[in-house]
Image (cartoon, rainbow, N blue to C red; front, side):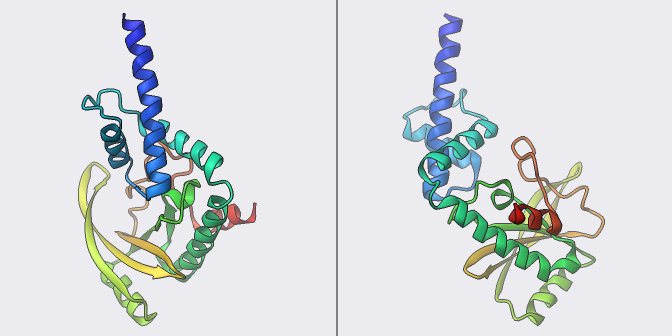
Length: 201
């Protein structure tokens, strides 16, 4: 009985991973937890003990994109990486690090470019944006930082039609700044030269 239950759970996890991946690819859901919960609701499952983990959804997303978006996704990914390089060059003084789906290769037309910056004072970035005549919005996000939590300033702008989120950390916090889904991404953060190398492949 336990073996049958385990096989049933494995099948359920695979099915939910596929549904979650499809939601992320087709509807632009960026948050893994949200995608998995919505997939469970679509499947009519109230019991969520057998939800797939992020790694399983990541694998299903790559498979889905390879099967159904192979004609469009690679080009969109390249375009977003090109914009990311442009932004990173402009903000090179703030030691930019690219994170998220544009880095790990699963970005779609819905994806934003997510970059971590490091500054003595977050206000210096706001001044930099104003001097460069960027239109932007500002907010704060509570994130895990080292062993604690911190309110991290974020700036939202658009560059060449692509949404960009800049998260600003204090200088010297590169080793503390969160890595995008460490349980999923092999290459979790990349400097400008690494992103340029991805484009050169």
